[in-house]
Image (spheres, rainbow, N blue to C red):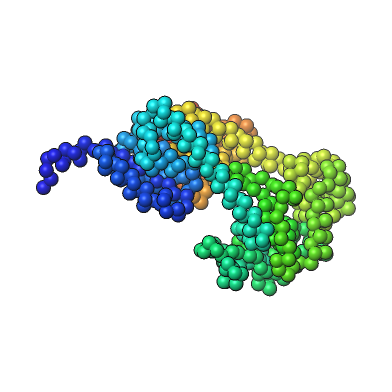
Length: 519
């Protein structure tokens, strides 16, 4: 039986949440060590940990991918958190944000909700005093600088190893394999896809793959240079043979292009063609900065064949606009028609994808060349307009949510808000066989969102007709075709105005429950 004093002390303890983060297996910052340190701190100050948020193996450079961290912020701002303080081991575990204002931004959101953040093993009390604020900002800057310095050291080390001929990561490419070697150079076996070395002194080198794959690489180069097949035609040929890529996928024009431009097939290793430091946007480096080590193994492709392939690729991709349009006209005059397949079959002109990138679309290229297309491409412009309209609707929704204090993360047209995933799709108005308007609400993505927002366009596809907010459990009934009155199954989720959509989303995403137009 507990003594009354013990029960009183237990009731007086302050409920706390602990946030734990570890980007590597460094012993000092292991999850177990952080837990122990925070528990000791809580016991000494009359606190009890009632909730744990842990991001294991997550970088602190930003909040992207730190699901536990984002859930913590969402719980704090929901007003339903069962804790009154957040305990963190130190400032660096909160994050090594490159912009100190970003770190302060997330902490302020907690403080605004009257749930302060406490750094247990820092030399200052996070009490908002001028001295504590100054020290905290210095620590944030130091943590950000630590990441920058460490990144520079790692980059320099990788460049040095690349100059020695060691492979520095990523898929090796079709027809190549990664071999693990010891510190003294002895071979230790082949690393399969997903496998990594486990000893710091071990290294990885590239070697030719199985004879069947290296022979296939030579056939790809020969088909492109000597048989004048296009990259698209080569991809179709390989898929008909049932040959998968190195990632066990079907071939595409881009994967064939990657093979044709990969200098590793000459027996050399390449590094530093692109860099993406500190989670910044990847940038393409100038060839003078590339690190090339030749003679690593016997070439898979003859150098003369490789150079001929590069010359042909350069010709196809670097024609000026006038030359590209002239080639289109000459092709049409010679064959009498024009299409993607016909363009891709030609070895003396750019492929169809190059025309799309250069002129925006194939119909525009045809029009500039003075040619009549072999089909009506109006649907392409319609898809582009509907995609732009969907982005406009999404931007408006996100602005409303952010104005309401919600945290939103956008990804490929969809977004997450307060832990819930929302997807938006704009459905065009088509015609049924009897001529009446018809809409087809498509199947939800493989990973069904918590909420699917559907915009049905009116006849003419210039203005919206109505809206639907469909919860995850109902997405199993998609795709579905509907008439002017909609689909009977989804009538309860129908909303007539965009203002109603905004209100429903705000109630759903801020209250953390299903709410659709009063239902």
